[in-house]
Image 1: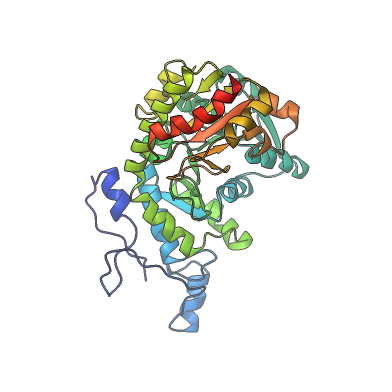
Image 2: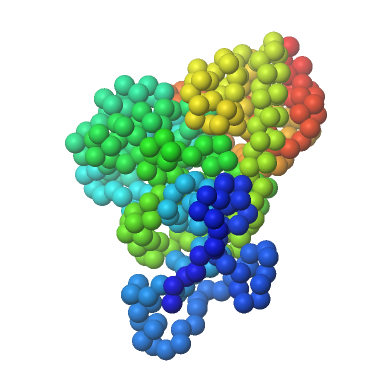
Length: 400
């Protein structure tokens, strides 16, 4: 038995892959992908079961590490990212945990951007007690990445853009540094998704996703994934999944699978709204600074436009006058924006990073990452942008 593949033209474009790639329909001919809610699979005899558990015969065995719905999602996301392999995980953080467990051992060294998501920073820091050391460097200073390399460096890790500063790294430059030192480059592509950016085309080896965000697109489920070469996925990460079981549930995989079908049009519409909102925020006197790659004022604007299909994405961060009190006043005055730390939803969300996503870091760590108390992050959804302006103006007016 071999798990069948969808018969698509070799030159099928991304928007077609987003709605067609996966597994062929069952014998019933369903047009919408089936949801396989089962923990295990029946085998015709004991000898066949033994071969399948030993990976001598390809088949679905046990949903902790193989399930048709999860496989459909993995194949579709891999096709959209331009990789040959993908493995789904229970969450975005589980995908980073899998990356560490699959690739690293005591004595290894990691170089990581100091501007990555707060939980990512914490996870790499926590692995110091297991003998894996991490050097944190400037997201945008290529020289710092190069200087941090050691003979035992095995992994470079970056987000692009970062959460919440929207800093953009030069993926191609970091890939050259990694490969020159015998290491791999992993890029968290959560903010852009494959609709805007395919890091493997710029030299990255592995792509990290929190499917909870734009891949789902409506804030319904928790999910994650690692995309990369099929051989690396099979030899390094599948064994970790079989042992550790940070499994993606079939239902969550199905929700993400269906979300991928509208990813491209959602990202386009949300990014357009985000640009309009960012331009408006720059003109507000109580706003000290706006962080958005689509603005000409963004330090990496040109690089972002080159790497992100000419789009700035859908996340806008800005600093208001008055520090933490000013930020809280602005957030609490909103009536449309959802006050939540999630992002990627069709509903616009607003949060205070210093006390939520980066709340577990010390104040010096937050300062090093550029997360000040007056910062607000808005993940623009599909709300009318004029309504969003009015919603934010309610709070900003109180700071004047």
